[in-house]
Length: 623
Image (cartoon, rainbow, N blue to C red; front, side, top):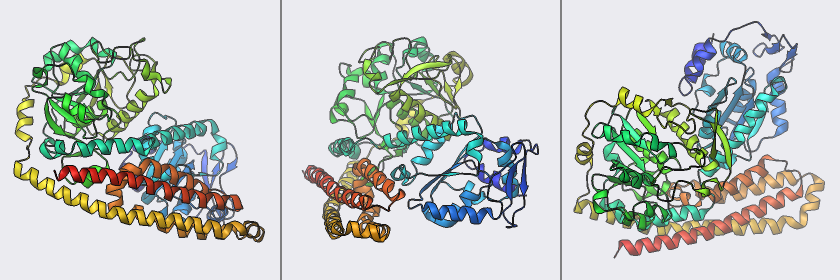
């Protein structure tokens, strides 16, 4: 009755699941059994003679159990089995808009088809926060989960994921669901890594951006090249060891394809008399400058340095190419207000090289040298600045992943993070991505073939790449530069005034935390004995949360969130972890008050550091 409506909702983001659900065989193993609630039949597994829910009134029983569990941080809910969907229905009905992310693991297509035929769950299934991990092929589960866990405020609730089992489904397929939970853990770690390990990391990028403000003001941005090469071939040239197998073929595609390459590829390409149209860079340390030092002026002609302004100023100085400014999806660049084009770029310069081609409309996008794995003991191609065997790559651990030409291949956790992000980008891309690396790790969603085959199939017609770039890029006039500078000076002055407001709020929050601590510390035993700890906990949390509301202000997000996000995410995760746990003991109340006090004190100190950066930027702009 409702199958097609539900499938239409699923098709919005998971179209590949639609035929698998529609074609699932209804064998009669499962059946709907009447209960006293006519609108809520039970689900019975006839083969194992098991019923999934309370046989009197499933919905009432689920609501009663939900109330017992007393979820206080309902943002993310995870369902072991979809079952008849009752658990998600009651959860969403109970928490409304507080429930944002719904994660479903369901391995049984027959159960799912039976449910979607008889119940309308299109509102949940079509919501942006619905994450579906269906069937027994787990290849894409990490990517789906990572995408869900980086939405909205999900990263602040990773210690407060509410796990709900749909009836007896976990016990009937516990090995599968145990693997699902492990992938969820991996995706949670990956989601957290996206925001850095400490505020200092983000501050480094902000500091560099402020120093590089003239690069932003004086040069055009990637926005001018949106869809400039729609349905034209693009090639990402990275520095994996397999590059040496096909680098000679790049000579054939001159004037036929757009070539984008990470910074580390530049010297390798020049050694072979080759150039990329775009050289990408996004690392904050000075080290990437070495990829350009020692090159002749001629090496930089007919090549655009497509750097994110978070790079070190010495990196900009070392690269003498013409510039194209490329923003990452950071709040700081939204605040700056000088539009240069903002891309959702992954963690590596290789990811960035791919994303630029995607933004410019290239199709297909062909990858070469994107090994993301060892080839024997080799880590990089010949001619790479820091050598072909870099031991530093294995500092964070080594693991095995599926290979393009071998079942499994050795990689590092850093490379695997880059690979996972490629998979996310490829999944969201509407065109064709060809992995012509001729070695290396498998990137799901790509078509594997040799570079020779890719050229013969897709790179045939002449293409005036440089002419198109030069025609499309709009170099700011002197008048526009001065206008941008004055507008930005005003933004900085407003930010400095706003900083005083932030400091006052966080100081008041710290004072209130301390006040509540001193008020209730002498009463802890009495509160515990009388059963009032829970109410006191809720009252205190509600009071302190008012001082957190400043972080929801648009100005706070634009000016401070990129800098503070790693600390805010960690702290809010810890606090939400306490909130979602038992709150019946005096220790939990003390811990929550102490954590809020530490949070307000630490954020105030971080804001003061950012204030100094703003003062320095203000002085530079007014020179």
